[in-house]
Image 1 (cartoon, rainbow, N blue to C red):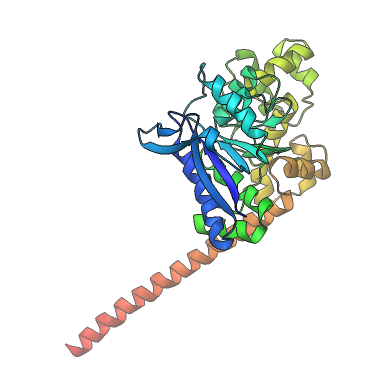
Image 2 (cartoon, rainbow, N blue to C red):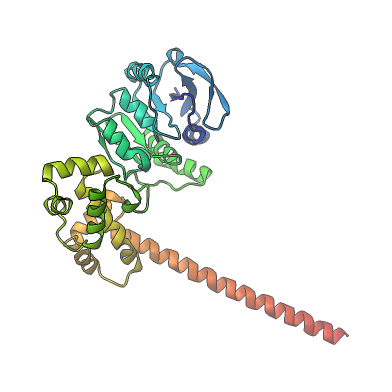
Length: 348
């Protein structure tokens, strides 16, 4: 029997948060015809406007039956208002009848309002991770991850990350080959690890606090040094307890995770470059040794330094091969022009 996936929308939702995962599940049916069936629902049913002003026909949530997966889509900004309360109550009831519940992007705010994320790890769009942590302190926001799975509750980051989460679900429900097929059909990576960074640099987060901003700058400039929470608290002129709380609220992660991310981002170009040993890189960026650096890369990126270096080497090889082919093509073309000109002279 097909698994019933219900997408829960509300006024002003982002269309891609619906259409991206929906297309992933729909394409899975090509390889596995009994894979999924779908419903798009809202609290009361009827036409619901997207953030772009398009209207989507929906069923009433209470009429949805035999539910397997409930996915709450996101909006362009963090949802807020009394309208969330009845929707959150409905989600709580629906979750009792579903195998898993999930959110895409800022849909995590609606899911958090329902209480289903209490005590769990969750993610959302990197820009709203600190706000999600502040509004719902009972959950633990991981502002890095593309998607998370904590028990039967899933959350994903913004926009295309909903597709990554859907691919992970498809792999779990069906098998890897079906998920690979879907990725090929959608022309997306199979599949970005859940731990891959949403955004390239931690310093692009705006913590909204001069003290925390100064701590991030200090950490970036002293990656080789001891960056314990005690040291960073001294830089911020706060107690360790206060600093940990303020930092997590402002940045959306613990100081230790922030430092780990900075070290990985700073060292990754050298890892991929291949001119230094992993031990040298580990010491230069404060990992201590290559084994610890390996564990950090696997935990955060989902790939070992060896795998990153190998992939970079292969990519450079393809570029060089392409350049050689291009040069040969240009030379052959030039020769062809010269031969043609010579032929014209002979005929003339």
